[in-house]
Length: 70
Image 1: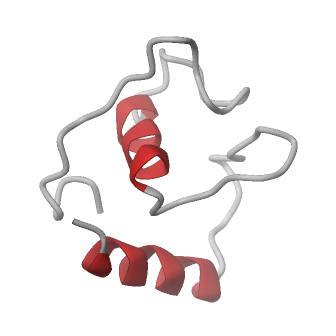
Image 2: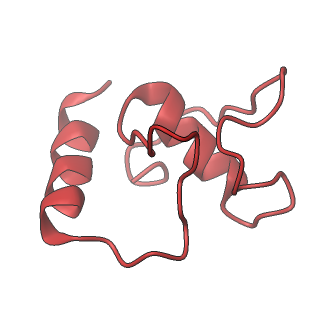
């Protein structure tokens, strides 16, 4: 979604937003950018759980927010 929407990439300056997505993760910048744009949320315990399967409703939300978020 980040690439398709041509978002300017975002890297947090005060540390990572999700405890389970370290800067060494290949998708770190994309996840942080999507989070910064409000396209994704993560969980209340400050995790993203990148290895979990995504549910259909979660994917629909990401696509919808990606389309309406400048």
